[in-house]
Image (cartoon, rainbow, N blue to C red; front, side, top):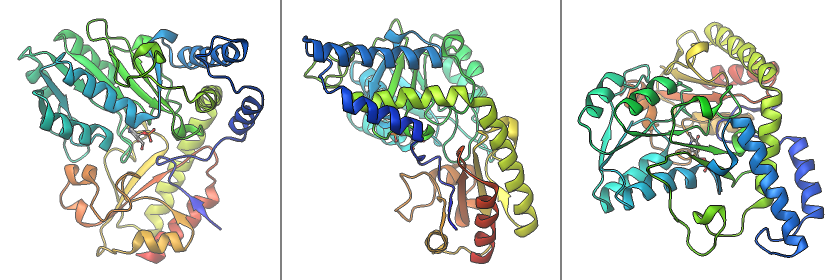
Length: 376
Ligand code: PLP
């Protein structure tokens, strides 16, 4: 038996996505920028996909730009605004994804933009009182805070932060890579200027994502030069196969959202109750065991036994696929920057992120906890 419980890193392609992509690849090969009929056909499909995604996430199709994924999308927004001098500072948090943190480190090195990080407490809550007092300084500011944390599942109160930003004329970007397709969301109802998404966290293809941009006073200008694609902002022939797959994945996610959420909640409850019995010393990181305050598909645990440096390797050998932090930090021996920001003490122990998908079974959960308890 195997248990794939690393769905926050990536998910398996949905068979319906595979069949849509396969069908598309067989019939459409035109370049959407070609003016002849074969190109125009591809362009029509591209724009249909854009419309579909826009209507699912509740925005206008002209507010969506397709990218090569969430990483590119996050890089593009932060770097463009900083390089063009549209902002004086960026306020973010130490528990963002590396595609934000590493980009901020680059900006700090090469641009004049000031970078500030908000405090987080042991539960991973971001200090919004501190945010408001910083916003009172009335500098041209971009606030970049993720909606759902990819390691501990904590949810940011998006509306509260967005209205705070509006009140002080700050721009607001949220990395929503982990929340699209997992939560009911409509961007037109949210006080956001920028958001970023990806296809492969919800059974779509890897290497495709998007930027939502609605900022009237800070329009994104070209960041990939060499073509008029994506309204001239991102040149290069579109990854149309990926985009078609992403649109299908978003459609399926929206269609199955309530059943999927109910399943995730059952899986999470089951996980928590078996864990308590099998490993009573285990604790939870962030708010991942609070159903209302975290993503339903992510749970992060701390195993306060003596640290076992080979835990992940041993679990891998047993067929249990989980991660210690985000996929980007696995492969290195560094402790998770998120757990480290929450608690230095916890970061000394083994911490595991377990993340479900609609394909996860109760048997996988039982099998995984059994193996984890043997391994420690
Ligand atoms: N942001 C978050 C919160 C993520 O979890 C990820 C993926 O791990 C990314 C951004 C990067 O997305 P992509 O893999 O599409 O580049």
